Image (cartoon, rainbow, N blue to C red; front, side):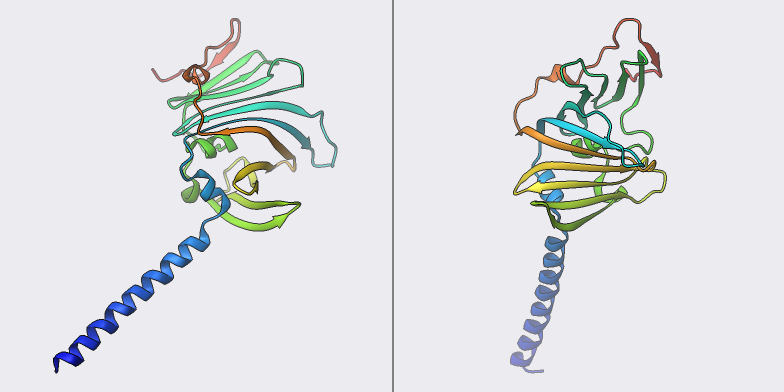
Length: 219
């Protein structure tokens, strides 16, 4: 075999490898959604939101307002309640324990963070729950001025049917959640700050006096 022929074959082989690599890289880039790009480089997120819930019969409940604080990896604070009143429900993850307060019931439940099949939007944004390993993530196009990404659990044991994240440019502005009871929650994110400083005390939770505590926190 002449040196020129050997060189041509080596060149063809290298070109084929580069071509395959380019195809794989291009396919990977195309599979990335607006949600993937948003989570890339996300360290913290602070937002205020309004929430409306429609039941399976199409009846709308009274709107509520709330706030969500996220510190990756694994920490968040989510609270919601009627406008002008104290939060009626609070969920806090300090990275080790997940706390949930229901003020109406005067009850607090606590369990290890990351345990169980439950996944909330806050957990996904905080990186508490692996995104691609547990969920199908698909871009579903543009509607009503937003680019939508659908997230659905791969396991039938999840508590929600699907979530839809709505982006305007690089900002997360909408979130729709359909549960297995036929209810739909719509969250509209108003004021948001990405990668700003959040006081660590926001992710510490102390049960209010007189509340029943179910479960035992990890020390």
